[in-house]
Image 1 (cartoon, one colour):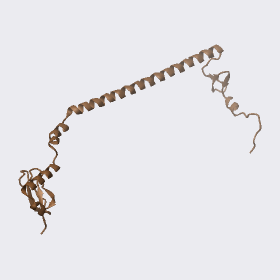
Image 2: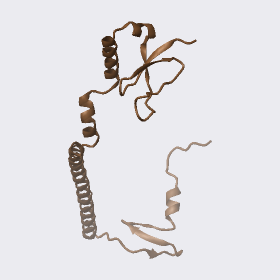
Image 3: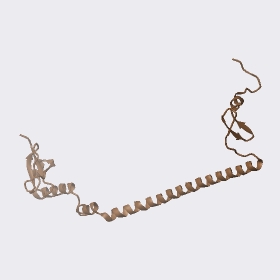
Image 4: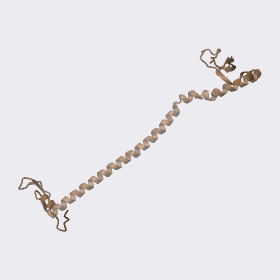
Length: 178
């Protein structure tokens, strides 16, 4: 036969002696589902205690397992406290607004810088066209060459069918034969 062990109900404090192989349920709690907990003490030690010592020991075990009164009172407050949640979310919103302002300012600065650069580049293009007009060099529309290929005046030189020959012409100087 197995040795007996002391089991107690963590809710109501009822204790009883059962074999260690059983999983007892508290007979006094109405739901019939409250499992009893085994004490970490031998059956004979518990039997040698006085009634007052047993009550003190069981009450200490129950207090170890159960939350304090303050924890039980404040638990619904912690679970359903919308004021603290709202305050935390307001802080998050303010932080996000500040970050959004910084990013918006950065985008505005980049936009302004790009437009300034484009205006400066167009201003340089206008000035170069004005200089070209004053120097007598004008940009002309494509003209047909003798062979029917388009030519464009670039500076003083003309680009046309002879351009390829000019590009492949060898430069004077020493030549390496392979």
